[in-house]
Length: 398
Image (cartoon, rainbow, N blue to C red; front, side, top):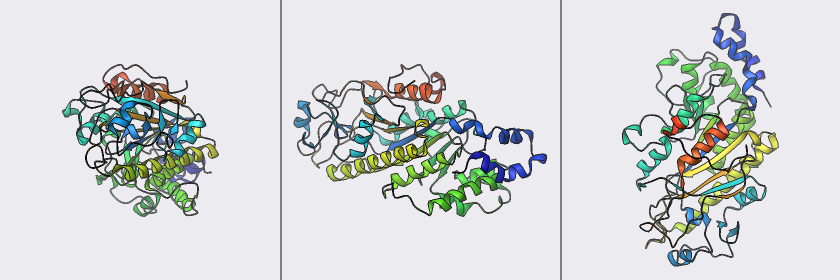
């Protein structure tokens, strides 16, 4: 496996060392410093995940009352305890739970919930409620502003996928990028950096490298090495879109690419009609990708450096609708995976008989989850990032 030192030895940065600015020479000398840095991977469950059929309150009398068509029988639920269990398609997540590598925070939301996809997602992505701040900077971007910049000049945060980069990763001074696949990058970067790279407005990783670094050829060579190894294939990952993105994140982490925060999107969660089959597929895709990713990092000996956090902009209504689906709701679970979590359930179990306007009551503010990740995992102060001080939760080992 190539290390950052190997990459720098091959790159134009070393070859040009006598004539390059001193700050780049210092970056080369300190290239090994980030090899043990912690990495955060955020997975956005886009569309509003039905948390009630994800972490199932099978013993709650309200479950049978309100979920006549969508109720999953108790004998099919993967039991966590005598009241709560996982969707039967989450077998991969259950395996992580058994291995003490999965934590679930229940009842996560925010005050005065908004049922608009766009508005609620902006609230989660920015940790701000003022609409004027929804197009400025994201909570991840603000966190990246506080972290040391990667010494290789790569983005501090990176979207893996073909979606528009989310506001979550936009920072004031930190750089964010986007990458759909290694092959896309290989096609975009020529053997030498193109002319006038700083004129590009693209948010792709290739354009970022061209625009902001002097060692673009070295970075491109590094990713081409990954392309060549990727061509050999890896049968340990399922053949799903999310698994492909998690595999790419793993490749970048294993190659010591330098980015600290990765972001991926799994879409399809707006299940207003015929929910059972589509949600089953989503759960299977999520669990398969998570397990393959964590297992892959374990084999590489670096799983303890990585934390995965899965969230959705809101949950679904408690009572199913007339189309065998569910409409936009409020609170839901946040799932965290990796060997650094304290496994199990956190927060109060949702009550399906004690509702607020037909919705689950929030028991955990999502900013408490963020504060825990920011301070305990990434080691950055959370008050400025979240515009307030929020009590940390106990789902991470110290």
